[in-house]
Amino acid sequence: MEKLTLYHYTDVKDIKKIDTSFFGSHYFTDNDAKISGVKRAFYYTEKTPFEYFFTSCRYCYTAEVNKKSIYDLKTDKKKLLKKFRFSGVDNVNISALLRYLKSKGFSGVLYNINLKYDVVCLFNSQKVLTCIDNIKDKIL
Image (cartoon, rainbow, N blue to C red):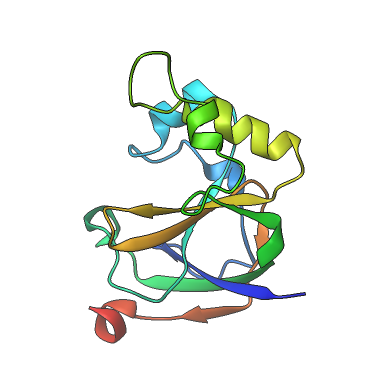
């Protein structure tokens, strides 16, 4: 089984698992939580400088998943982006796409943000492997 190491940023110290039940508790996920109903947690695939809304985060936790359980939207072999496109527009119904992937047994989805970051969104809580403390000194 090929493992994929993931990096999750937070300002919470000493967590043992990254819990999807917190999805929707931050301003940048509140609306998504109301619309989709698919609880999830977000990770980066590399220990890179993070997006601006994570600047207050002090900890980086790692987790591992089976790479084959993640649907790769960058390659989109099943052409799901086309299947879940709203009629007549370029926007994709992400909520329906995530519900579909979860129903098909995928544990998450990999995609790219502005060609800078590969992000994985997982549908289930994950056990923490390691914690990198004081990440501002180590990453930025």
